[in-house]
Amino acid sequence: MSESPAEPTAEQLVEELRKANVADLLVHTSSMLASIAYGKLAPDLRDLDQARLAIDALKALGPLLEEQPRRDIEQVVANLQLAYASAAAGQAPTAP
Image (tube, rainbow, N blue to C red; front, side, top):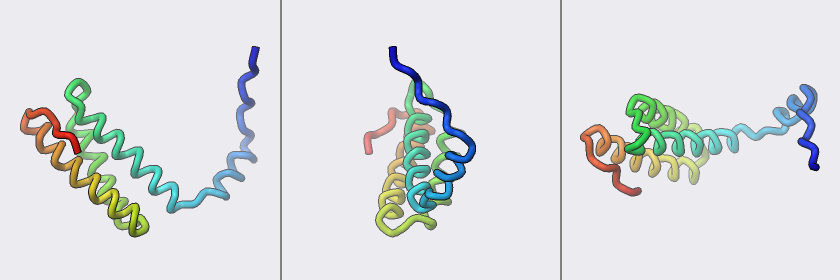
């Protein structure tokens, strides 16, 4: 029988936050928002308002990213906007 890992203490959480790199966190957040946006555009779970919010958030974060991640996110945003337009028109989303 394996034991579940102990919950981190408040001090451990604070220490992890001190080590966090904001640029890396922005890239991770952008990736998560992109995944959520694509999920909200899926025909069986379609939620255009939530997809639009995620796309807008990605557009807002883009200028804060370093050059390579920014270019990647700009391409993702373009693909999401096309998928959003297709979904809003009632078409099946196209693959990026």
